[in-house]
Picture 1 (cartoon, one colour):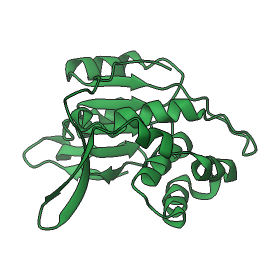
Picture 2: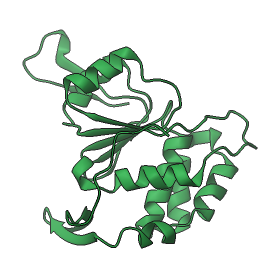
Picture 3: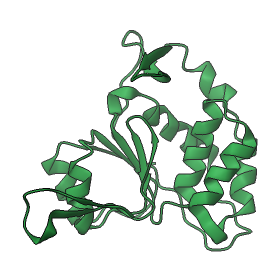
Picture 4: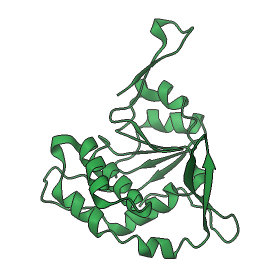
Length: 202
């Protein structure tokens, strides 16, 4: 959690980020479930989209926030498990979430589940594989956010996730380098021949 002081506001003008908040990439953020106390902080991100990885309905307060700020909500319902021996992450669901994630028309985008650890960590881990990160770095990042509750089955899922099938359906992705003092690779969809993603629950 980070706290940002906004000059000129009363009551210290402190903005509180959601738990486990971090920047994944330019225009991509991750966190635990945003509480109403985090809405002021989320406003500073100018979000276009939220990828929500829990099966439960979005709370009305959160729905009001996304509606008021014209944020698209993409829900991919993945069951959470407390048993470290259980695997409940469907590859198809992660693939569909990745298609939304890498489309920069949805950026800035926030990925979150309940605590921002396991489901969010698996999606980010598969995204890192798409970026051709080495597995040791992918696992280190996952464990950094999961802490002592990291799950071996999550790591096995990330390791076995097949990114080639995703790459094959993304021929229109353009790799473009743009810099802010250094070269940064970004994934861009070509507008032609690409179907816009729809708000959906899976």
